[in-house]
Image (cartoon, rainbow over all chains, first blue to last red; front, side, top):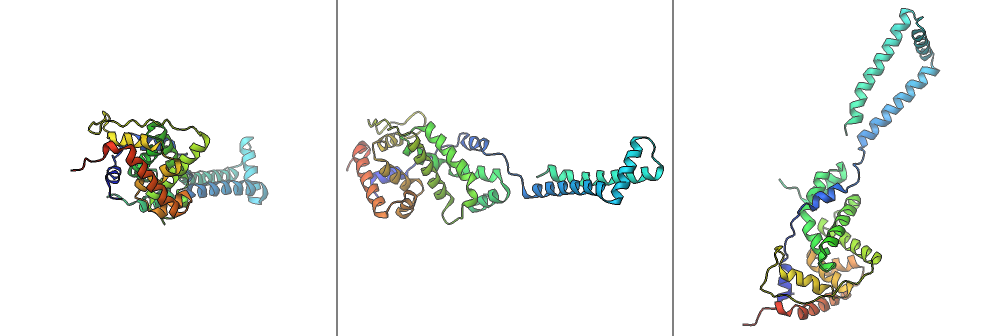
Length: 105
Length: 180
């Protein structure tokens, strides 16, 4: 294949990108959720579900719901307020740990 | 340091690394767009649309790239399939204008006039010959590679390329060097 046509065809002109690659990138589908993010979502949802179940089913949970009811109706005794505060603090700490993992990829 | 294609592909697959994918596009866009321009008779807009579609398909299917062939060969195969799909949807014959320009002139856009003439002359070739010939120059593909892409026997590919070159030699004879 070493004739003049062959040489001319092999002497190909380079096509400048001219924004082509950028146009391709703008058409790519939305980024995939990473495995880590999916795992974090599953963990958070499981925690919320577990907390909800324990709140309404377990004896300790009943104490929490009772304390919450007393705080709402302004009839709480100090020990119940402490239980509720510890529970809320636990939730805040868990949220603070889980949220950054959920937001970042 | 520039990573090789295999390393860039690995990053795209593992981390959905778009920067790595953009490097792959920049590296191979000229070859893919050139191939599609030859197939579309020099229709730059259509060729670029098809090239974009080819890279998008490449991105979606990159998890299936096993590295048995070069990434460029894999991309040129996808580009050919995109072109064939387009032809099936829009079965419109290309205009066959084959007036050959002055071989000493240069186009304003910097593209060689030869390339322009070549693209136009290729529109007169039957589809099989046009694809086989373009593939032969797109990525220095072997006859076996082309046969695999076009799903036809190697012998058929060889004769298609020979016939195509013979026809082009006649159509582009104005570009042939004058014997000394």
